[in-house]
Image (tube, rainbow, N blue to C red):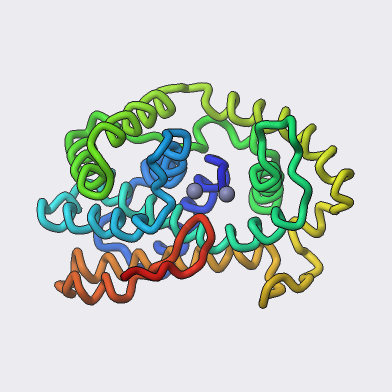
Length: 281
Ligand SMILES: [Zn+2]
Ligand SMILES: [Zn+2]
């Protein structure tokens, strides 16, 4: 999902599930978890750094290793960094196969910088907000997007060292600066949603041109796609379950003495761009 808002909503709902099932060892910080789930998308805009590629699993497991080795789990913001990344991974991996499937069946518009993929996701943001909170994203309020102290030395060190190991150092620093600018911007949600509303005008043209309905995009009538008939909301709920499973898995490593090999073997090797299995040599 491109949207910061959907990722914030999803992470918050994952945390509700985690609390309900009493899977907590150290209480994460809800605001920080939402923030870290959202901002995992920002490096997309940095050329050559695509953290949605095959390294997503490695990055998440590296963050878990650093947290365990340095006992950073006592810091609720740092554990939220890990859980936020997991939420983003699970949501994208579940929903992207469907979005990609739809996008492949639509005509690309030549003049717009906004892809069909992105337009559909922007609509789904609004849809998700209305389904769960009965209001559009603008009315969720700026505070909804959460906040995190990006000067927290534990966060700085974990982000630096994990991204540096998996990617390369300079790009990681640029990513992190962007991270800070975004989150320090109090009007972020307003800006995002105003931009989204503007993009939604394009969306109407997109629907007409492709003769596609919003019901088809949300798949409320369970049309067949690939080997599934899941709706967007089905996929959303599956992403909550997957997030919860992966949080349980990293908790086993961090708090319950399970080996790194065990969790690494169980962590799915899937691309969060496509949801498909990645075959590594
Ligand atoms: Zn997407
Ligand atoms: Zn993403």
